[in-house]
Length: 157
Image (cartoon, rainbow, N blue to C red; front, side, top):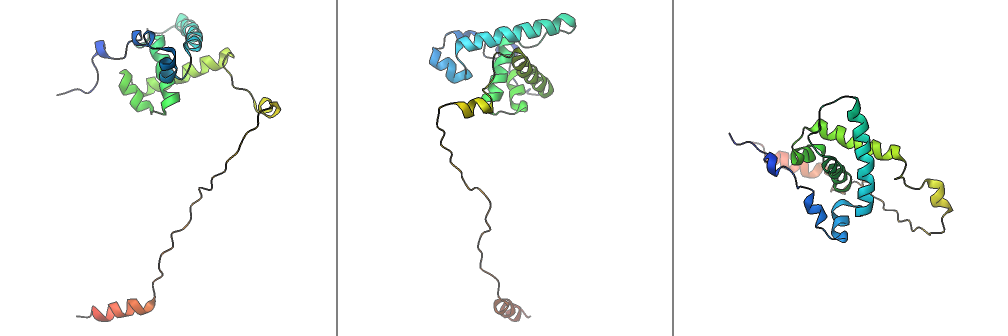
């Protein structure tokens, strides 16, 4: 029987290909600059070390692979199922890994978006475009009783 999936040796794109990318290509692939990627990766490595210092078996994926998986989820809107099959792990493991990475980055406090008040205080002008995407009924011709009566008379056997 043919088993779907990727061989372990070919499992993932090894991270060596990331080192050969130009800065612009790296940002297009990951969504962050290489410097930001390195900072985030350091935070994730610390979080994994503290988690694994307590108890647990070694991870199937490296820190870089877990972080790339998270970026792939956040940038590409791929489902956990698709990502898990790409990385050769279970769907639930994919979910827990992505959630762990997100929580580790949030807890660090180094990567936050400005709040609503900060945006309101800024000097930038924002253009707002509203699109009415509500459903509207399709206009169809109404059935008249004259046509229905004629059809019934013609169908008499």
